[in-house]
Length: 115
Image (cartoon, rainbow, N blue to C red; front, top):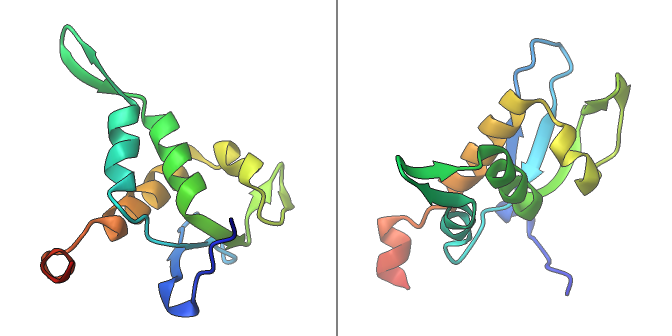
């Protein structure tokens, strides 16, 4: 099923990679507590407490939220948006982008009150 996303539902994140042509990521908020479900899915219990598989959590969050990108390089060459390239993004970029998507996806008190 194709999900139509209006322009006002699209968010932009610019990753500061130290270049003049910084990567730009266009993403949507994850609805229905999806970001929390992703975190739980990738967290396992151990003797020392919960342990999260951060990379898997970041990849799934980005895969579910990312709509497009600009100025992204793969092996030094610019590439069009391809969900299969998400795991190849630099670790610090994935961490910041996934954190931004998850933070923007949290239900605000106002939204909870109006639901």
